Length: 166
Image (cartoon, rainbow, N blue to C red; front, side):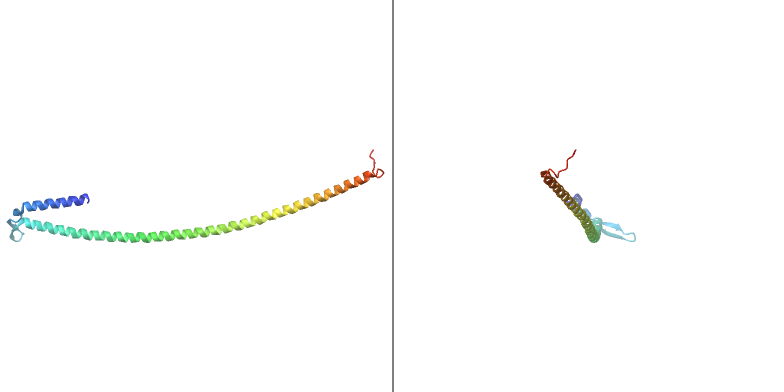
């Protein structure tokens, strides 16, 4: 229980004890003026009736007010839910756009990679061809040197054919 409810219950209990203790004064008849006429009635009961009517009116007003607050809260909850759905849809569309953008960028990167790879492979093939040509030239040169050395050996065996250096 909240402090406000406890205070209200305590006040009502004290008021009930007060009315019970002073019941004879509450029902004692007295002359009451109604501005245009006078009436004989118990003042305590009249005031108790007015207090009860005011309390009933207050309770009806509070119930009506609480109902309006609940309806307003429900309306706000529905609006928040609608806004949440819109935000989720916007976020999903942003994710979709991001995915599309990333897919396009990956495609461009793959194309650049393919072009770069083909250029590198062309350079490697050209390098291999140049290397083969250099190896072929070196092989031919080596074969020529070996042939020359063989010729010299053959001439070296025949002293008449070997020119003398002076």
